Amino acid sequence: MAYRIVDYSEEYGSIMQFGKNKSVYIHRWYPFVEGYSKEFISKIVDEYKEIQKCENIVCLEPFAGSGTTPLELQDMGYLCYSFEVSPFMYDLACCKMETTYTIKSFDNYCEQIVGYFSKPDMYSEKKIETNFKTLVEHENIDKWLLNREVRLGILDILEGINKFHSKKYQRLFKVALASILLEVSNVYRNGKCVSYKENWKDTIKYSRSDVHQIYLNRLNDVFREDILQMERIKSKKKLFSNRKYCYYGDCRKLIFNKIPDNIINLVITSPPYLNSRDYTDTYMVELKALGYMGDLTAVRELREKTLRSHVQIKWGELETLEIDELKRSLKDIEKYKDRFWNSELLNMIRGYFLDINTLFKGLKSKMASNGMIFFNVANSAYYNVEIEVDMIVCKIAENNGFKVAEIREARRVKTSSQQKGIADGLRESVIVIKK
Image (cartoon, helix red, strand yellow):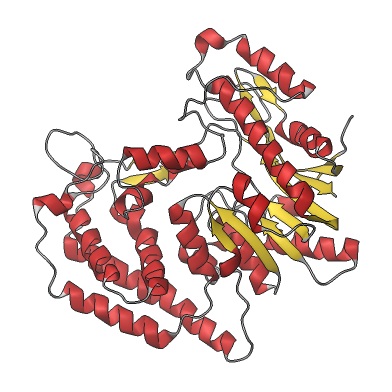
């Protein structure tokens, strides 16, 4: 079956990226590279209401990420279930959805941190030691993520936060620390990984007290401002929160037992793209430096729970879904097997669509009769072979009893060095699917 592809580049092109959120209340607490803007979500909600002629909407976001979708929906007054498998991203999403912060408590905890800085512990070598070889500067390595003084400053902040009596404020202040982490580190986010800053050994010279001050400035200039605004809003109306509907764990499993049947009206989601990006790697500085991951075993366990869009785990031989477009792509890519940069490439592709299929199996029983899904994906390419991800997802949706309304082309995305050969870029789409 041929699916209708509609050009939505004018409608979606400028609102499909998180960049528009960088200065927006609460959304700005942490820059999330992979997210989309709040305007994209509100546009879809307005469309759904117009089509279905209803006001009461229960939503779902299977891949919460930084919490953009459930946060924007709660601001609009809509219940949104969500799932997040990364412990850091889960903290970030829940932190942003919390509506019970007060400026009085915030200022009290800020004072506690400042007081702690005035008499910091003298860290022993043992406290600075880590199970991750390149996290902190030490002898016998050429590259490290954090200079020794920077690591000391971060440890001071973490110890101060751990003395808080409130888990809610521990989470908030930890997110604030995460928001300055790359600034004081030796690396920057570069696509699917982190890269070292230019001349970092000569130019990155933050002291322990510099890290303290940068952190306090971020608390005061960003977080305190937004909590003040939250109090002003609460003085006028009661705030609704989706925080308790955000679950920590793998959506492929939790969707079957955390959500009542036949309740979801609207799904707005953007799963990881099939681009061999391991989001565990992308946010490894936060996961390691803030104590979310203690060793390589923990890293592996997290990778095993993520959608199979990366090649970091060997899964063994996986089955292939009975979809012609998928089989054809796999066959064409397999011709280049002797040139593969990773032996797990074909398994990654198979596993990715098996995971998408599991998700749609779960969605089938959870969606209401008037349910609609807006599914944001991007096509992929390896060795000049394009994988039409959107077309394959359409087949998966139909195989699970859904109807595909159309594929909306939002924009063209550039190919990476591992996704060669498509001159005009790869289609990024929003697939509109109905129950």
